Length: 139
Image (tube, rainbow, N blue to C red; front, top):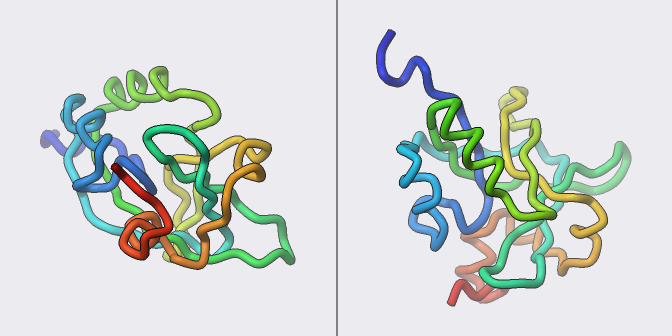
């Protein structure tokens, strides 16, 4: 088995994107960047209050407008993923997210109640795009 065969995917949307201010939380666990991916057009992204700024990604119900969101894929060991998960602050969580290619992958999500209190930034199509447009300040 090669070193990459025992790795699992984690898809991220915000401050854990490659080059982001929290990426060290992944790289300190030995994570390796594995590329970009888009969600299925069934999601919304809202800006949560707090520091550092975080996006809340939530799936929309059938019949409601959603968008495809840009994300990054990281590979890490199952043990590292477990350590990462146990350190996540509320209202952040990990779960299955649907992607444009029809796959479901482990990714960041957020409690729906917390997401509904945030500012909707879905129209930017992703966190990096919202930051570039000035809708989000990363300090």
